[in-house]
Length: 426
Ligand code: PLP
Image 1 (tube, rainbow, N blue to C red):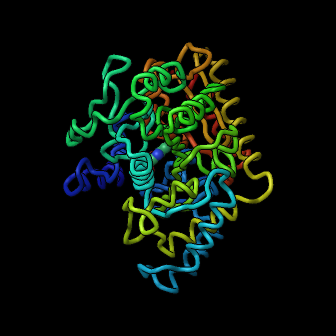
Image 2: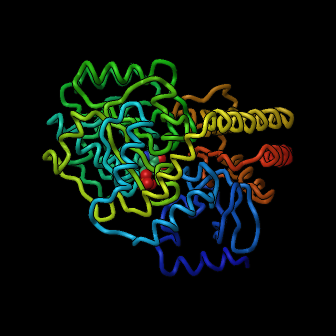
């Protein structure tokens, strides 16, 4: 038995399902999750001393690779001065100014400790600001585990939300409308029916929780126009795309300006950080300036801010995102060429340092329905073959992959060669 397997069986005695976040349990691919002991650059090392080229990057934050020297030093320096004060610190001001400088739509920003807190708070703010209750989200988009967001549509196109998790009251879920991503006509139908009741539309500008689905041309622009027309708040959930797709986030990449933006992952450089921000006029409604309550014992924690600030500062190097995108494209093109050689139908999406691959006959994948029709068994088989080759991909067919600046061209070529051997065995 491997040490990972031993630890997993011990973990199950004390932790529900043996993990502290469900996708880590490998239910999406079968088998036993690996337990890691350290990471450096583009590599993860498990407790059995195997090395893996990592395309998960802690689900996004590790855009500069693991154990980055500038981030590590910033954390060590901050920790020297104390771990938490529960009172204002200078670094919070520097961090807020940095976020305002980098993200086009953000005039004011509030720090929180996770992406879930960011989206939950942004929605409360949108509801408080508009005095409306309904929110519109998209099937296949994930925005953390706040009650209002753990909802998906029933079967009819315009049905009111039904909870996808026990414990979410139907009385709350009924305020969540779930539309079809990349289908602006469907969104128009919701607005025609409920327009003056919709507080906000929340969307991942590149959907990264149903594999990787970029917005079709006009989709984000269409959401902007509908929100303007109906006085609804447009929220871009950039927890995943923020500072990854481009330095100015997906909103800069696509040139569409939301009213509010939620951030997480990269903004913490590997520490627990989230943030939400946007138009000063809307943000003015947050306590203590306004009446919409929001708070956090560890919000703006100095050690977490130090890691995040160091990360954002490093990301400002000229052309860093161009290079990241070129590497992700090299990987995507390489996978496609190897799959073609092996006669395996494969579609690929890639935006900036994010990518996704789909075992499907379809030439392009742009909808949640298409994602659910992909060959899951083939993905699971491929997943374990790649793991045996020393490549750590996200253990689910519904997650985007991530590249870091620490991935060398040699790492990517080695991954493509491994993929070629694995495609040939499918
Ligand atoms: N929003 C998006 C787009 C996410 O991808 C995630 C997490 O994966 C969240 C929100 C929730 O963030 P957290 O897991 O930090 O609560």
